[in-house]
Image 1 (cartoon, helix red, strand yellow):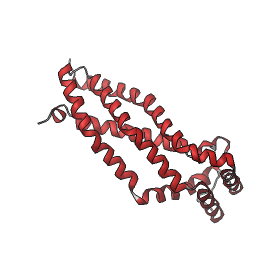
Image 2: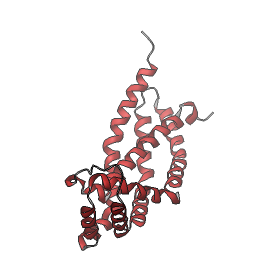
Image 3: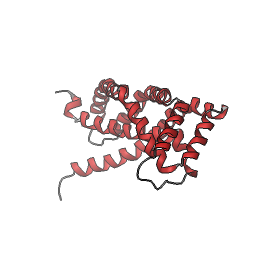
Image 4: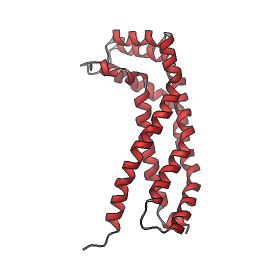
Length: 206
């Protein structure tokens, strides 16, 4: 049995990857142009998007070049994945009071071997050809909740302006850096809670 298995590192890596997916999702949603301007939006009180809203949102997504924009965001984020997962693994293993230095070193080495699998898993998820289509479909009711048809049309016009095009062009890099910020702020807090849980679980009953 490898040190990775004996220390239950696969279970820890699942937690790391799950947390990373959460950070990934937060960064992606936070940098969608739709939500970046939603602070001035008023939720629409309609049960389902109207035909006019569906048409308006689809035209806006076309103006945004939504499939390519989303793919670029994914690609930028994936470039940051190895370092971010590595940092999370190092934080969890190095902060484990139940491991001596030798076992920490062995666990870190084993964790490093698992990173390619985590990357491959995430890459496979993001490479699903139906993913972007599904995300696009979900944008319609999302916009319908916060915008009127005229507002969506104004957004479409904005994305066709030089500033709108610049916003879309910089969105992938903004997403990647937002993800790094989310990971930097979120992961230490999650790890602190996990460490508390691990310590409580390993303490003998009084």
